[in-house]
Length: 172
Image (cartoon, rainbow, N blue to C red; front, side):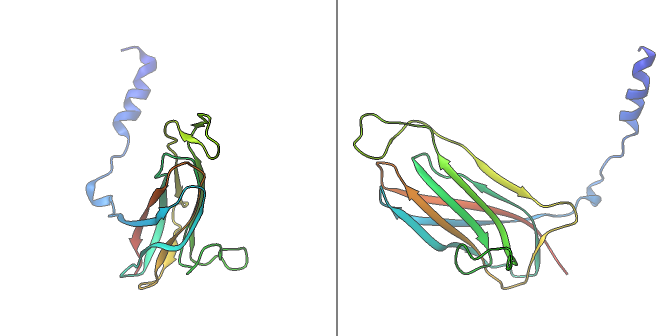
């Protein structure tokens, strides 16, 4: 072995390993939400489209909002403890966890007179992780909602199902 590789090999051997006892359990909550049927060419707004109520006080460490549709729609998603959408603002952001928007997917017009026709998938996921040592604290029994605002510009009537994954630890 050439001498210039010895320090690197030694460094790899001396790296601290993580013992299983040092790994802390991270819990996951999946909030299932839906617009129900969203007729083509309409706006489907649904406050409290999904809800999760923690049984204990928790610190949310990250949130993942995956795109759930393959047609021409625009979606605004909000995850918060607020009872309706668009209440999170600079003067009152307590309980505001995540917000994402997406427009999907790439579409092609086959001579349609309005809307667009489907041409493939646009896979996007919004994942938010808070800095180490920080989380959004939610008390036991406080509902966390998923609010949906969907503009269906496709030629299809669709049901938009939106899963939101919350990663959290109990706070004592």
